[in-house]
Image (cartoon, rainbow, N blue to C red):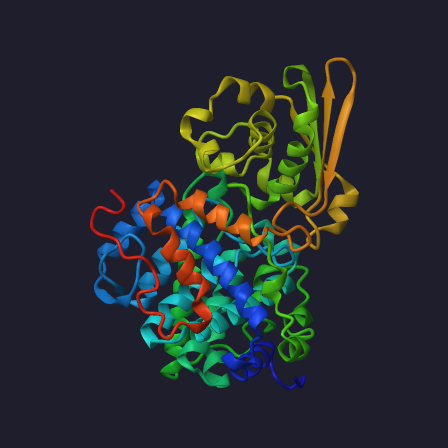
Length: 460
């Protein structure tokens, strides 16, 4: 890599030089695990109200070669990426990278899958595109700085670089064409946090739109449609417009070594066992550790100490719908203490006004811990301290919640998560076929018809 090349050109040079055969079997297996995790979230999303809306929107579009969950007939790649991406970001159980604060799977995998179907790519080519897409999204997200996240959802803004990289790799773009694709993906980047104030559905659209934008940018790049070469570091570019503390050098830091040694960013991504914002998970895990040692009826106060960003996003003492509850530390910690879980059904509407939950929520207080804050985003720690009526205190701290690379889900746990998530969907009977299909991705000859088909009643 030479300094005369822009950041996007350096990314494009590196990614275009990769061949699917370069990826190790271990890397392919890791990518397959994230595809399974993504598929569980996407299938679960088909049963949610916003998921049905997305599927209905997809149904209104013209036919094409790419599979859309919930539809019997295929659609254009951009539409497939939009709908499948949105579906996979609804139930808040999709993957998350700590350093970049990006949910890469819900953006990269739908784009890669749609383009792989359109191109007739092999499973190994598809998995290589997934790895490359994760790398691009995470590198940009890691460089954009903490200030960006105050207003912008990194998945929406940085994810488009990942979907463009994945789609462009499968199309076979040249370095120049991929540079243009990155330029246009960056120009389309958007996704504001204001939706969270209303508990609105925009977050799901963020993922779908970023996935579709990457497909569009890559396709246009193939046609010679130019884009900004300095979209990241330019004086009117991504970092200048959207951040006050960007570290542009992080985009390409160690890129050559990562490619040569296959130390890909995907290996550092976390999976989520709880159906809520990842910023709540360390607190939830700490609460779960304490629960067996507590008399719940004797709790006077619960103090949650964590990093500042977690409070910025999840300090919601009075959630009024399931979306707000998923972003409420007060609600998720209370549910963890009361029930020993924070699963999909813990956000059913009738539970939002459950009196024991509301009573305990009122006793949950939040505070920024300076030591925890200093470690973010490299770590997302939390301490939960429970004070009881007799004056005794129980406390637990969690640095690496379940699902982090330091505390990963086992393959058995991942398969169990998949089973639980699809059990109440129209796809439950296809569990074994889907597990087998994902497990054999590396040797699959063609990605067409990878997703399960649905009849017209699949999401009624």
